[in-house]
Structure formats: C-alpha cells, structure tokens
Image (cartoon, rainbow, N blue to C red; front, side):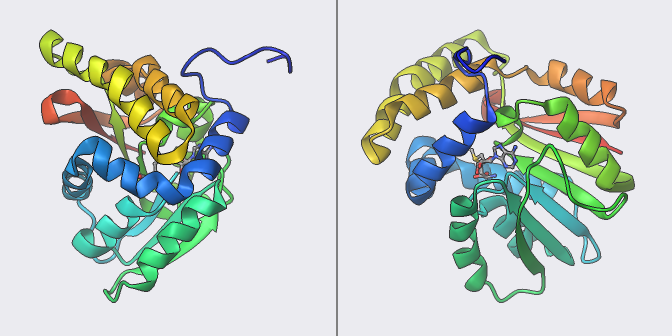
Length: 241
Ligand SMILES: C[S@@+](CC[C@H](N)C(=O)[O-])C[C@H]1O[C@@H](n2cnc3c(N)ncnc32)[C@H](O)[C@@H]1O
C-alpha cells in the first residue's frame, strides 16, 4: 500500500494496530470486563476446555496481550509450559504481573513476537492459541503458514474470535452494540475513540465462521471445526496441523 493511502475502516495495518494497543494497554483489561460484562472470562474458559491441553502440552499463545488467555490455560488447563507472546511489549508487561502472582505448575514465559513471523523451530508446540488477535493481522495467510510450521504433526491451532451470530435478530442487536457502545465506552476509558471505532469495524469486516474455516483448510490444516459461544457472537475454531 502506498504511504499516502489511508487503510479502509476495519482494515488492520501493522502501524495502526501497534499504535492502538500501545496506547490502550493500561486500560485494556478494564475495557474488556466492562464491554463484555465479564463474559470474556467464560469464553476463555470454554477455549481451554475445547483445546484439551494435558500436563505434557507445550503451548504458544499468540497476540496474548495482557495474558488473560495465557493465565486461563495455566490455571485451568495446566499444560507443561506456555509461551505468551505479543508484538506490543506494553501489553505483555501487564501479563507478566499476572504471571508473577501465579503459583501453579505451568511454566510461563514471555516474548515479543510478531504472529506473522515466528522465530521458532519447526514442530515445537502441541497447541497454539490466539484470542481476539487473528482479526488484527494484515496477513492471515502468513500467520496460518507459520503456525502450521511450528506445530507438531497433529497439533492444534485454537482461535477465539468475534464472529457472525447466525440469528438476524441477535446480529442486529450485536451490531448496534458494536456501533454505539464500543467506541463510546472505549473513548471514555482511554480518550481514544477512533481506535475503538477501528475495533468495531474490524469485527464487522472479519470473515464469518465458515469462511474462516475455509481459509484454514486452504492453508493446509485438517479437521477444522468451530464452536459458537453466546449466540455465535464469538466462535472457537480448532484446526489440526
Ligand atoms: C484484542 S487484543 C487480544 C489480547 C488477548 N489475546 C486477549 O484475549 O485479551 C489483540 C492483541 O493482538 C496483538 N497483535 C496484533 N497484531 C499482532 C501481531 N502481528 N503479532 C503479535 N501480536 C499482535 C495486539 O498487540 C494486542 O495485544
């Protein structure tokens, strides 16, 4: 894209996404709790259950942000280890504080990593996860290629993301909520309403369940399926390498 071209509404670019999350890192957790009425915790719990880690699992959490999915896995799934990564160090710093208060058996490490270019050997992980992150990647194909490479054969990519509620009525209310509440609440908490307008647009621009599953198939994953949660406001896709 030429430097003077403005990205379309909801279109992720590296600069835009890095700028947004660097700025909102201190308020991100509060915004999450208020905007989802705390339901995001249930979504993360469901993601752990569906990912089925065991005490030998070696895990990678991409776009881990402030570490809520990482910590849900450590507390509930108890894998052997989980590497919590993000390309915004300010987000990971919040996660590090949560991990410092954790005393369970999972080994938790942090690393600044771009989810589209993974600095890891092939076939290193049993499970790779990404929550509310894949929507923000300008190059999903690169992410899928990289995740397949670093997963062991038969390993699973687990994606938690906002999606398209199948019911038109739920969709209408949900989109109205995204349009009105998200930018205003985000603006109030951070003084940065345009960033939350982008987040709203990016949710609406993201492929629906079947389209995302097709992309995963096209990238070479097998046994791709998804589970809708909360009327299909979010879905967990699971795909095998
Ligand atoms: C909406 S937050 C989700 C954070 C966390 N996974 C959660 O569930 O709360 C999106 C995160 O994706 C990160 N992100 C976006 N693009 C990325 C990329 N290319 N590589 C790594 N992290 C990225 C952002 O920095 C941000 O922390």
